[in-house]
Each structure stands twice: as structure tokens, then as C-alpha cells.
Length: 318
Image (cartoon, rainbow, N blue to C red):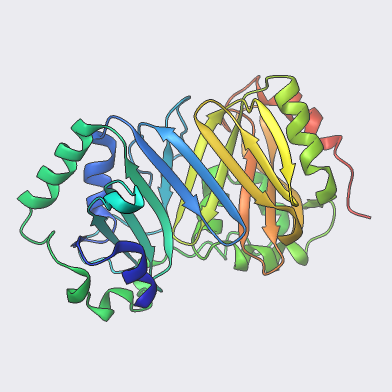
């Protein structure tokens, strides 16, 4: 619980209902700074949040918007995550923010409130609900009980054979990764052959992103934490490597990957309207998924053709 206190301070509201408060409030805000942060990666996006996506929903990432997808259902008694709202801390220049914690109390997502009107919207929404009040001192440890098995959608039967992967749409692959942050999927990928998932040389990642920036090529970037993933579609405009941290900048996004922490990267096929396509999945040395890159829209018919040519040209791991 100490980590929660450090993040939120003493003045905050804990919002009952699992992910429901985020689903109810976030899409109504005009502009937020949405940050997916982990020990080895960061993805900061400014914009408007699209409607939250839940397991089984078709993956969508409207250009320019923030796509958030969660691994748990829209149920009032869900305790697989906790949403909290903190008040501004002027001396630290910290704005009012929405925080999402996973079932172990780790911060996985933060939405900084940028617009004054959004501050009023958020304050009104949280104060009007009788269950959405509290303080850090009132935090109930039961909020962080391990999630109930009934709240977990198991996809392992579908992933038991690699040849089935090509028949599954991208959103089922993504749900499989978000469920535990990618560890289960990483173990499965390690056991597959080249025809089922091709391992890519991770040293090529800065060059790949630099090429995409040079070509002003729009593509979808998804950064993953356990229980939640954030997606954004568009080009990147500048690539830099600072102290082994790969930085990718665009007008509304900043992405960072610690190159020293990256363990493996795979090209994984999935079913698309054009027949099939591939996503590039990047994992750290512990088996957690850091990021996924794919074509603009996984269900497009034409745009992904040259994307696949580029992906297939990437050198394999030696």
C-alpha cells in the first residue's frame, strides 16, 4: 500500500466499481495526458480518450485518439483493478489526475487533467457518486485481492497450437497479452518454430522506427501493462537514442523503450481482411510485453500490404 500512498498523496478519491468509473468518465474529457508507464517503457499521449475497449471487443484505434483496452469485464463487483482520482499538488506541479492500479497495487496508467473544463467535469462526476469518495487512509487492502478466476477470460485453449494463431483476429491476440502483461504468451512464443512466430533481431528496432519516421509512415503503437494497454495511430517524427533509451516523438506522443531491458521480439501472424498480417511484439527480459507495432488498422484491406513487406524484410535473430 505504500506505493499507492506515494503516488496519490493524502487527498484522493477511490472510485468503486473496478474499471467502470474510467469507462464512464474518461471519454467525456476534452484532452488528457495519458501515460502508460512501466519499469522499462513509457508511452505518453495527449488527446481525447476513445470509448474504453473490453475483452472480446474488436480492436479500434481512431486516428488521433487515445485507445485504452482493459483485460477485465464491465462488472460493478470487479476488483481486478482500482481507479483513483488525486487532487493537484501545486508545489510539485502535479495536475489533477486519474490513476489506474492493477490487482497488486502497481500503477499501470495515469491520465493527467490538462484542460480547466475537464477539472470541473471530473470533480463533478466524482462528487456526485456516493461510492466515489475516500482518502488514502481509507484504502481497503481487499481492493488488491488477486482477481477472481471468473473474471478472467482464458484464451489458452485457442492458443494451444501455433497454427491456430493465423486464424484469430488481432483483438484476441491483444486480449491474451493484456491478461497478465504478456508472460504467459512469452512462454508460448519461446516454444514455437519459425513458421509460427519469427524471432526478430532487437538491434534493428531503432533503425525500423527511424525508417518509419523518415517515410512519415502512419502505424499503430500499443504499449502494454498488466490489465491495460494504450494505443495510438499516426506517424512518428523523430527518433533518438539517449543512454540506451530509444525515444520516439510525434506531435502528441512520446514513447520510450529501454534497449538494455529488451529480451526478445517476434513477428506474430493474425487474421485480417486481406488474408493475414503480422504484428511486431517486443518483450523485456522478464517476459513482460513492452510494446506492439502493427499496421494502421489491423482490419484494413490495402494499407497493410506494404507494412507486411517491411516486416518480412526485418532480419531474424542470429
